[in-house]
Length: 381
Image (tube, rainbow, N blue to C red):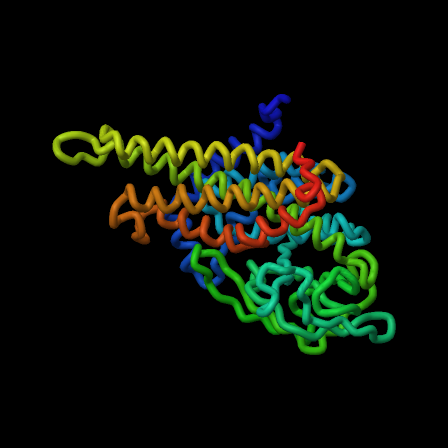
């Protein structure tokens, strides 16, 4: 199998690298993080100009029809650069719209960088189980009325429209009766409370108080949204694995450079064999995570739902374990300054911690992997 990236993919990566190095330095990022909105309109406009917002959108809606491997390249560079713009939230929302169909006009706006999306999926009681939905969607004439609360919606306060999961039937936990809607953030009854998260991104708790939406707001069929939700969540988990890989690469490179320049007892500490062994262990974890993250990106486009679930959960688990090990080792090897706000490595470590908790942590995905039929039958090939 050819593991080399295509020329177009390499061009996207190089364009992002140049922009981040020139205009999105660590200090520039810190100013954005501490601004009122927590994002930069100028940075978002640049991402759109570079074609990043159009990449995952179908050609029919003005995009480039990029697949998950194309997005792998982009997310890895965004992870290296600690970019805090609402890109992940928007492309994840766009995936819902693509899978559901019928929202081509919104996808055109996403492609042009005119629309930011956020995905209101998790609830206070649901933890990592996206089928645990207490938010309700009751039929009301030719539309629906949504009632409920969503928690930790990444970039929820920065989005113009929200992808919302709600229950129109069935038990609180289960695949039956799940409906998906796209709801403008300024719809009456939508109450958004934004805040900054540990890693410098923005999130929001969102209340839906008798929010009436028309039939056109439905994504897919009423009560049959679970397959879309499941597939889109796997897509998002795959993108997060790529972002985590970029962050791990950056923190590994920074640690290696530190060991080469930090002197102790008249020599660089990188010459001490014990520290070389720790760097070797970090490298092994990093390479294993790279392999699994790339495999997940490839399998996301396979069309086999069972295989997709199996590989994505395996990747999210392995990447989560690697992120924990690489991040902790990097902090320890940097000494006390490894946790200071002035050091980029500390921010990469925080971002890795948040990725681990997003769209299912390691324990959740390990259990999901074991629950797949292929595990019980021993079919791992």
